[in-house]
Length: 155
Image (cartoon, rainbow, N blue to C red; front, side, top):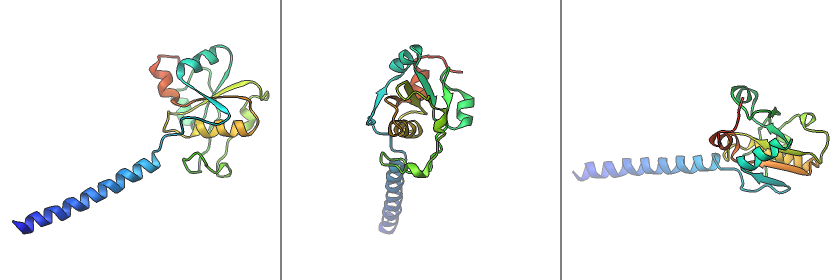
């Protein structure tokens, strides 16, 4: 009985250790985006809808097939090709985005979004826009899930 109990403890210990490692790894790789972005205004779907209704351009930073499946009505697809780490201090030189698709007027409002707080493409593209000199950058941090939850139009 002691042998079986010891065997159980060893097996359980290994299982718990493995689970802890997996949990920690998942937390590291699935970290949410920061709650703020220097030089930009974080908005929710209600504010984003108001801005879109007033003529502010909205940019979908997701890959083309995600955009094709469903996107915020009127959004322009400008995919952010991400290879850098999912962190606030990402190395922009590892990524690419076609900035020529953004408005020429750097004073014009522009909203960026992707798939929610765990999606870094919208955050990174908004960061690149701020660094490129855009003055009225908005980031819909909770992305298309927040927009859909409010029942706003998608296409």
